[in-house]
Length: 105
Length: 228
Figure 1: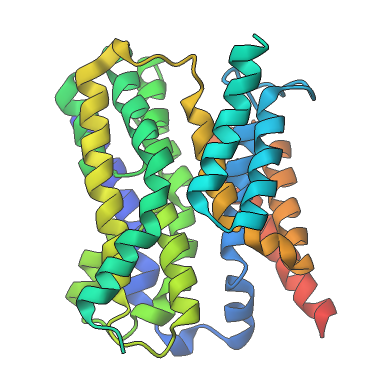
Figure 2: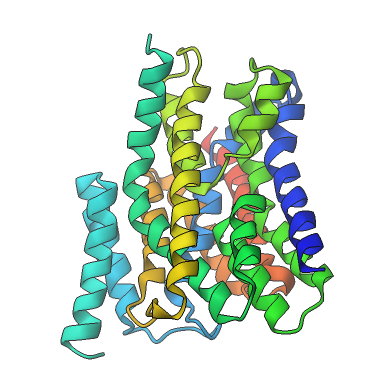
């Protein structure tokens, strides 16, 4: 039962990965569509970032003084100037941990 | 012209920093499955058959919470529907591949791999065999994801949730989009997406994850109209 559900979910996921790659050819996408598609990363990833920062494990909004907001801001500043993925992730994680562990938030 | 091997290596190197968040998240994914009381083979099966982090956790949580298989499958489908957008973006660069190669490479398309390969493709449009870069990013993510979820399954309840490693996930995506904060049009689209995702967070089947990008792309179309 569970295996059947996993395989069905896997096939659906694969079809969504494959459909556009395998079936769309260059001429099918107009110039305007292509211009809009250039925004896909900016349109998709904030929908993962914002809930990851502003919503807690129980599905409710965090307080404005939550350490995750501080960690995210540090990561944005460090990432913007360093252009380095490792520095961005580590600066965000460490600034978040410092507040949690040292200040026992 | 870069050789196939050079392209593959570039792909591996470009995505490697993201393993800082992918590996802890994979360990959590495996551990959560065991803690919820699922058969280890089933928990690992998800990593091969679905191969999509957040959707794997949601799938297990729904089933363990008593939801029907249909609801769990629908949620996975909705969460992973963003890959349609990734495919549409990448199709331009993968057009010359044979149908079989397209079918094979599609399995490897995931968030961070799409993001890094798309950045590389935009800067190197004239290169041949660009798809080797995507094999590098997707292949690295696949191997690390398998090892990480297996580790989580073996460690099980030894994995502490309190240290907040899940927070590495939004950070990895901040690293991907942060340079686009320099462009006003992208900033507008990002805020449209982020704010929509919070507004629609409680929509059924986690559909905020596709509703917010669609709203943001409509905003992008408007922004393009004003730019002219």
